[in-house]
Amino acid sequence: MSLAYKLSASKEARIWAASYDPKRNAFRVAMEDGQIFLLKRPIPEDDHSEVLDVYIEGDGEIFTVVQASGNEFSVPWDVIQTLSSGKTMTSDPEVGKRIGQRVKALRKERGLTQDQLAKMAGFKRPNISRLEAGIHVPGLPLLERLAESLQVKISDLISAGTL
Image (cartoon, rainbow, N blue to C red; front, side, top):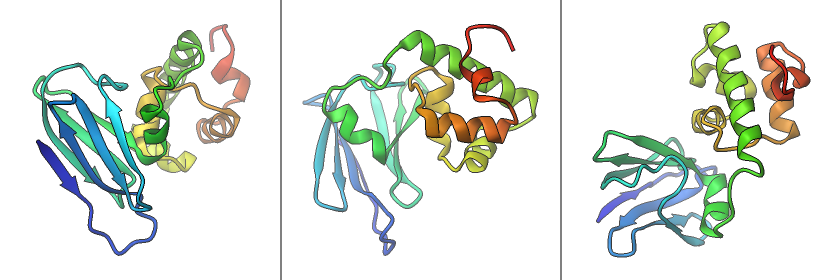
């Protein structure tokens, strides 16, 4: 069993511990407020290969999973409750993919990394990664911040036409 603990004096930290339970084929995540979640696999970006490691990054804002295939993905604290409830992260996968492709193209066109865009928009890098992968359909507040950061109109990010 892979296990990670985050010992932090920061009150902003959200994830206290994260582990993988191979018998249940699920991730256990304990939050600093005492909530415990069981995230059954697969979860977004999980390629079904063996889990080698689980570790917490930052101030407990995300936990990262390393898989035998070389795949590595992060799960932000604010997504854990949604995943544990079995809800999907996208309302329309095609819309999510289209917006993700547009954001990625505009980001690369401007010579920005995911981390740079995330900082400009006030988000964490894993959120930009999930958006660009089409796993998450952003709400209006995120679209507004992305459009401002990329210096485009919101309609440029969501329209069905070409840029």
